[in-house]
Image (cartoon, rainbow, N blue to C red; front, side, top):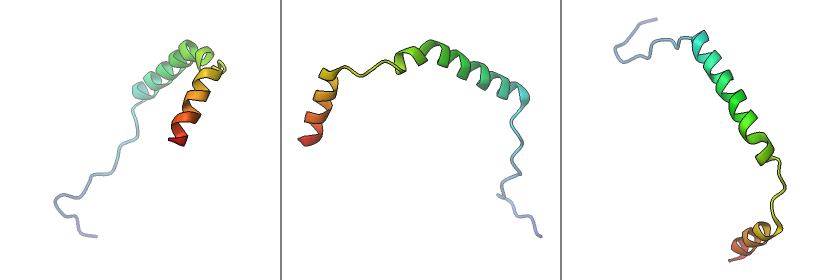
Amino acid sequence: MEKFMGDDPPKKPKKTSDQAFDLWLKRGLHQLFDDVANEPIPEELLKLIEEDRRD
């Protein structure tokens, strides 16, 4: 198979340090925001959203 200029080089696998950072960030964000994300949505906000959908 011929190789042409402009052909993309094969993609390298993600470095281990990048994977470790991604995992650390994901866990940290979950620790900070899971409780908030799991709170029920206030009825007033749901009502506003529904009203906006109808308009």
